[in-house]
Length: 94
Image 1 (cartoon, rainbow, N blue to C red):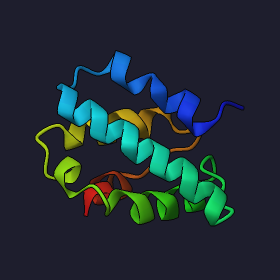
Image 2 (image 1 turned 135 degrees about the vertical axis):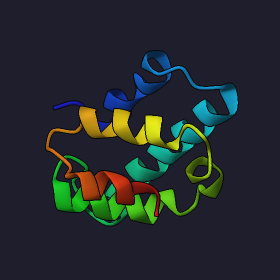
Image 3 (image 1 turned 90 degrees about the vertical axis):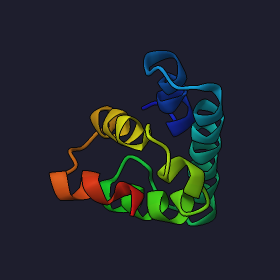
């Protein structure tokens, strides 16, 4: 199984984001990785990922407010080793 940083590093190559959003996305992914270790959570388990996302994403309000937040959320959701419901996808940036 790939690490979260390996999986999501592809994001900046696969989705067209302006430099500012790319930088914030990489910081968010790095934050998720750090928090996974800190809180002993597995990013590839649905419950843990959702917890890690909410812990980490709150530190990036500019990314949440970005016009690209749906694009990023949809990309993330399609790359996870589990499915997110529509409600879970919508709630990623709340």
